[in-house]
Image 1 (cartoon, rainbow, N blue to C red):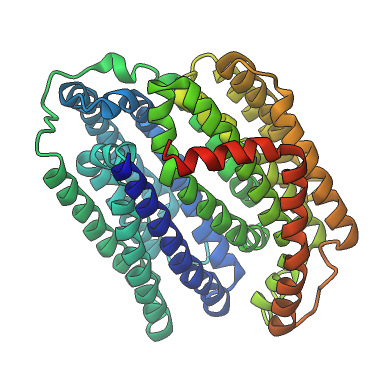
Image 2 (tube, rainbow, N blue to C red):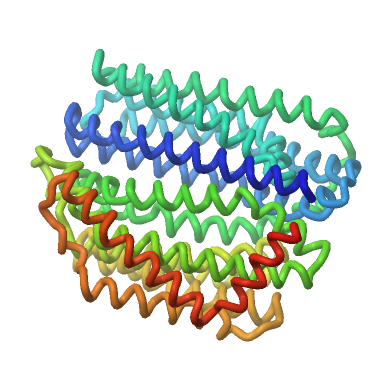
Length: 499
């Protein structure tokens, strides 16, 4: 158990360090894009990036299906079973890699000859190809080892190397922009460093798991649910990335740039939350398959703390983010980057999206992908239909409205299924968490609307943020102790006992 605790600590520490570096550096690049190239180029690059995110659907859910299939054999150290599962995954990824290469070349040609952009055609072609190379290497060589490291609780190896990658690649990009303004050279620098990071993870995994035989007889049945997983992942892709593509078609690239700048802040927080949770989710997944009673006790405390922390984070963002964006985009006048309603909608969207994460983990641990894929299909349909209509009526804010409506449906269904069908408990246990924390959120937002501190300097904003956090955070903690004190005390006792 001590070894597992060490892995959790390493994962958490490496995840926090990774996010500190990422947040410190990644906000510089979009600002430099805006200053050196303008909002339209920033919008074009963001759109290409989203297309590549959709390209990952070629993986067809094999990654998540493999993760779920590995929890039990990894917990039991069944090397033969692990090799059989990853052998099936490897053979599938080779086929995916070949298809990915062909489609990337087609996209590069389309963007060079058919899509008018503010970037020279040959440069766009090169950017597309260089963007694809690391993912190609991952499909053919590295991806299966990455999955095993994560399930085995060694995500710190990956996040540690990614921290170095982000540090070096962002510095390289900044130097290229400042010295040459060469977009192609900028992408080449990232591609080279990214390939080196992937090679490092591959070599580390080969040394740690010398017994792994990817040529073993493949257990295709273990990842048979990948088609059902694909439906869930498509739904996730629609949620995370459709807004940018719809806005690029129904509005223009300047609107895409506004959306992207707002989303930078929220996506960084989202990544931070995900990296922290992934630091110990491997332990929850293994516990789910080995000791269900202990899992339920640990899960109750985890869900309570997670939802409270999520509300705290997005409440503070709702109150203080708009003036920060005003400071960040100061001097950029080719698009309107001040939109209070957009901030509020982003906050509500991310509260709904992140708040359902504990229930989503339960479904992943249990492997209930096929049983719940109809929920994912309906979420996609609602998201796309409402978003198109809402964008035509309300523009950029309409994109978020469509996603919020879809999340209300999916969150309700996910919480119901995870609690009633998998955990066998009352749905109200989760809804109480939402009601208590939602009441605190409504109170704070009634006192401070999103534009309350608009126009402040950074120093003044920092002072106000620290001052008001001193009562907002304790307010949430106090409310949760009053209503869920027993659950939290039980969770703390379990952690002290190393359960």
